[in-house]
Length: 88
Image (cartoon, rainbow, N blue to C red):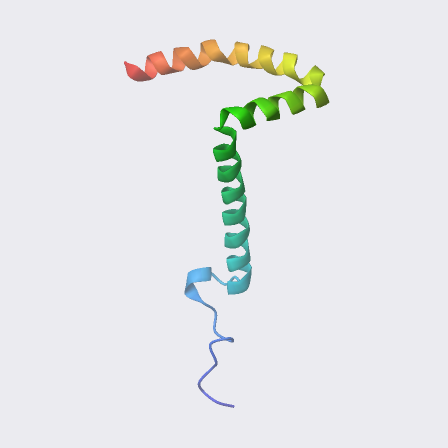
């Protein structure tokens, strides 16, 4: 048997023993998810698309809007108080 091992047999220090292809797959998956979120956010900045999406969501889930509005109203005073304390 040879004293020199091939690179496939030696663990890679950068991956801490993980398979390099697994790490690359996870990186590609998380990068793809980040790009999808960024693209969705950029699309929602256009006023016409935002109105269209809001109309579609309200038609599909009318009971979803009121609890969401109540939850936001409950969080806003806490957020304002936090921002005031942070600025001191």
